[in-house]
Length: 260
Length: 374
Image (cartoon, rainbow over all chains, first blue to last red; front, side, top):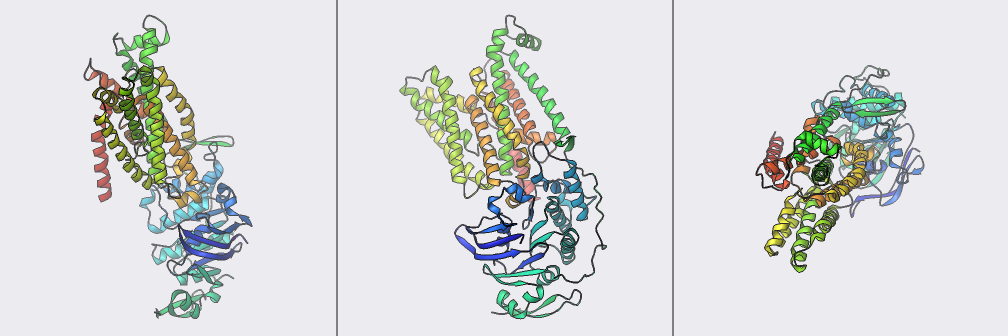
């Protein structure tokens, strides 16, 4: 088990969003967390990436309590891409991606040839080689998202947490980003945990789905096990038909209506 | 279980991964064995020019006084002994050095504050330092002044800087405690700081009105910021503070570069966000407090120097060393103007910087509004 939440209680201030939740992430899998708005899926992902400290329970990274490990060491094992990240204006793509090397650098080792190679490789993997000197604000939405993923890749971690990496992207760019995630997983052996809204894309690109509602895990398993008509009703209040995706063979959700 | 392959927008197979040289926007690598650094050539050139300008302005400043001298005579007096050696070394050099060091400290404090607040309008005033010092000093001069029958020289030379230092630190602590909410947010810090500074400023004016006329007059000179009569006892504390805090601030440069991103990104990169931010703000507070203790709250230097520096260096974030040198040049130039404009009368240096500062502040506000509309 690479990453594990054990009985975590999560919230902001006095507001508890998740209470007593258990979840394990296996090595070498792509896990996608789905659920309605406000169900706590992003909160859970932030806790898994030690961006949010649980008020109860614990998060384990490779069996060790993540909050007791030096945060810089965690950053060399686990990369996080927050939801809708913001960069200072005027930054170039290479400058952004180079930030991913921060956990590997010290004041006397600011830009080793290893750093440069890792950044070059991350740019190439995301198809951004040649765009390194372009200001980030001049890129399209899809390219910008790839640049952020590239930064997380430059970090050189084999565990990646992506919070809604496809938000604000059109369908073609969503598929583009998820294809990249798939390549990272299949060809580079990365373990990925992400939050997605689109159920059909989630079904197509995940090995494992985790369905949440009101801070609890309702179901976890393969897309075929999780995306069933009764479960969609229970988790999303959605009346839907589930058919086979004619392209990928994964479950395809066809909405009928919302149940009130 | 994995799903079967589907048509991909990318050609199948491992993408070409050939390490291409990566070119960063402003920085060039310098590698020595396993060690490596990033250099900014334009910043380095700017720093050298500014350093030369600061030395020249100091020399021009040191010409002035009861015995007028040429620049050559000033240099000779500093290096050799001769008849003017005492005047230059004991009176003129410490004054000029105080100006340079105070300018550098204020500018550095401003650069750190602006980077953390992500706001070009932020300055140590916003951290409560300068206004806190002012309230404390005015309070002491006004109350102790008449009680002690016109506070003596001891209070003026030793007491006032100490009171200023204590007031500045207390002001910063007040802002910090009010702004802290499970973490330190840049915007919240600015908003709280502006509010607290406004309160301090009004308390200061109230103290000035209740005080005795002569005490209030003396207090006014201090709170406008002056280098008049500054000696080695003012140089030494600022020099020590800079010797400790400049390396500390430079060590934080890399964190400062990362702290421009959103908090989640910063934490994800393995930075202890609140700790890094807290230490950098502490450095800014100490720099501003020590500088204010030495020369009073010289207006506008901390606000403008970082903004001038980032334009000179052509970078997006105030560069620390260039900002510090800009501050040194600015204060020294302003002092030169303060001593020549109305000669033989001498204005407090803070009056000149304030006169320059008002239009600059308006310019920044207009630019910010245009930016918001665009």
